[in-house]
Every structure is written in structure tokens, then in C-alpha cells.
Length: 162
Length: 99
Image 1: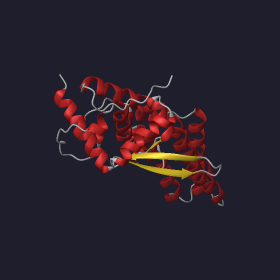
Image 2: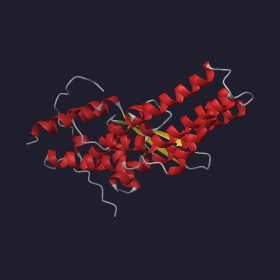
Image 3: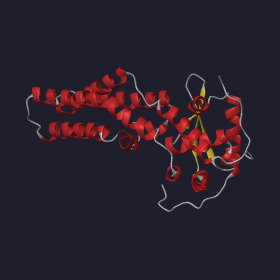
Image 4: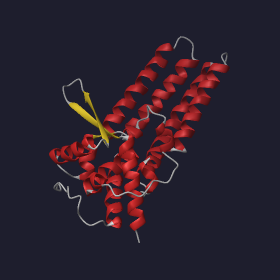
């Protein structure tokens, strides 16, 4: 049930109650940072497509599909979550999802570096690098979301107002 | 985030419980969509709009309206620098009173 407007600025100051209502509101907001399983699976597939597209011959289409798909998925996630700091398009998501988001990014960068530096590797090695990057992205998505929820919903303090 | 400790200062605009919740959500969440704020506060569109109008007039929040292809518009809300400063001062004031 919706509450009515509480616009009374002259009511007595109760610091404990004030922090409690602010913390409750933040906890409800943080609970939204939770993507369905298929978003993590799709992100893993798109990361794998980028790595494969960069390393395999004549596969620019895979890379384009991966890049465009990752951008579209990020935009959709921001719309669904409604909290821009959970936006994977922004670097802030790394801090919120740390350490899992950072590990996933490092694995993806390592896979991309591998397929670029070792240009003559057999196709199966490109496939393995792409698969590992995709699986790590998939597996670390939910714990990264959980870390973001913990940070967004953490107890308030004076320093939280930026 | 500024490293300096904020000066404790009661802020009548921020003090109203629902506006305090709005500011707290924006301080932690960055840019937050109107519907998220409405659900977080469990209030009607009209009530939230009224609070946002008060905060906007005080210079504490900014609204960004995004028109979507299907005709629906979404409004994103952010805390301004003045809003952050007022909230930090108000939090400091509350902590100075806390037992």
C-alpha cells in the first residue's frame, strides 16, 4: 500500500529513525540489482564472440555481433535496473561488483591479449580462450551483482553523500 | 566524494523523511530512475513529483527526461553538488545528535 506524502520538515529530529528510513530505502533500491540467469549467459556468449572474432580468421562478424550485443545488453540492463551506477557501460560497476567484476574483466582482457599476441595459434586455442572468457563472465556475473547489492544497500554514514 | 568532514547543518528541505530517503538513494545509486524512487518510497507518482519539485527548486536534484521510441518517457534523477553538500551536512547533524 502506498504511503502518503510526508512533507513535514518541522517534526522533531530523531536521528536513529532518520537513518533507519534512509537505510531501508537504499536496501529496497539495492535489491533491484539482480539480473536474470539468461542475462549472465548471454553476456558470457557475447564476450566469447568478441574474443573468437578477434582471434579467428575471417570472423569480424562475430566480433561485431559481440560488441553490439554487449552494448545493447548493457543498455537494457540499465533500463531494467533503473540505477545508473549499476550500469555496466560505466566503470563504476567495476568498483560495485569488485572483486568479481574485476576478475571477469581481467580474464577477458587476458583472452583478447592472447588471441592478438599469439596470432598463429591453431583455431582450437582461440576457441578455448573464447570459451574460458565466456564461462568466467557467466560464472562471475551473479556474485558481482551480489557485491553491488551489498555496497548499494550498506549502512549509511556521513561520508555516503559524496 | 570529498575527503573533508562536512560541517553539521540542519537542512529543512532534506529533513522531511521522504526527501531524506530520495537524497540517500541518489547519493548511493548515482542516477536513479523515477520508477525506482517511487517503488523505493512506496508513494504515488504525484507525491514523488511533489518532493522532486521541492528538491529541484532548492537546487538539490536534477531531472533528465529521456524520450523512448515507443513514446514513453523516463525521468532520471541525480543529486547535484549542492544536494550532496546539504545531505552530508544533514547526516553530520544527525550523527552529532545520535546517542
